Image 1 (tube, rainbow, N blue to C red):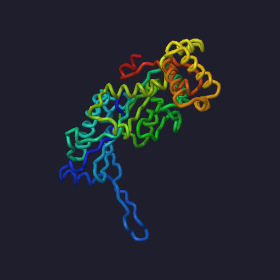
Image 2: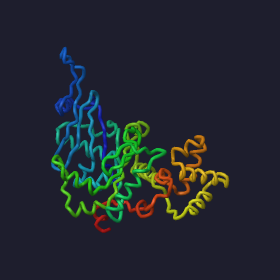
Image 3: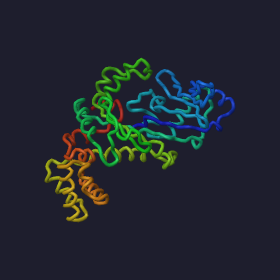
Image 4: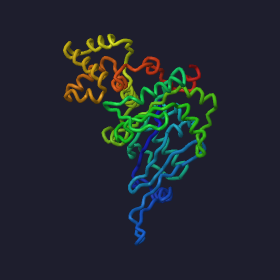
Amino acid sequence: MLIDWVTARVPLLDLDVDSLDLAMMIGDRIARYCPKTGDTRYETMAWDSIRSDSHQISVRVGSTDLWIQGSPARVCGDGCAVFGSGASARLDVAACVDAMRLFVQSQTGIKLPSDISAWKVSRVDVTGNLLLDSPTEVKDALKILRDCEGGRYRVSQQAGDTVYWSHKSKLRSGKAYAKGPHLTHLMKSRTYEGIEYTPEDINLASRLLRLELKLGREFWARHDWKSFTASDLATEWNDYFARMIGGCEMKTDADLKTRIMAVAPSEGRGKAAYGCWLLIQSEGWERAQESFGRSSWYNHLKVLRAAGLGDADLSAGQVVPLRRRVFEAQLCQSWTQLRAA
């Protein structure tokens, strides 16, 4: 796993006079004005990319803060954003912010506060690469995930083979895509300045299913980013995607009924939950939900999930095929591990 994106800001008041002058010279200014009078309604600074060889971080000066954002993986180690290295691979948010701070400072001459308590974080993306047997299985997994909707998930936008959930959410949102084709797309871009991946690298990466969780502004308004550990980030990622996928293999409907009855707090609750599942199968998720009161519906879902069903199963109204091969895949952490596989 790795931290694939961080957005952070520091108050302009924490910069010295010379650094503030340098900061105000970064980036273009976007102004809104009245064509009749020529009066400027407002003026803001555009994001500006700070580039150096394979590295890239964006900077913008706002009315009260200096903002930096980008992939810390691009400024740690060799700049590989597939698996990351250093602070990015350690899921160390504070060290990622510091690496980005040092990079911007070295490229612009702006002295940015080294005291981590001066910084505020408003976005962190946590990413994992699942290693599947073939590019075909990656496509099969995306087909399953594209139909996963319900509960906390809303398939909100589709672009090519990429699947998005709740992409406008300021709390949590998710994304899944095939990493191999994504690398090919990046390499063909005229503006790409990252490291050069070999045809072998791209071929190996074609077996990777990339799952990205974005923890947004509202999430960090509720949590202290400075005390958020690598374990906390990994738990957020696992909880988000594990609930979507489910936790076991069930070969027949009888297997599922047995598991439901085993995990239900009573025989009556088990039969009611199984009846809910049958209704989902016959009528679909939304129609089934309308047939129950709010508390009964969520009580039934709690039992069904405890029995091993994921939101992908509940959305489809069936235990999704290829569950074990696709979703009990190995979490791949490095090129070394990928080549060995």
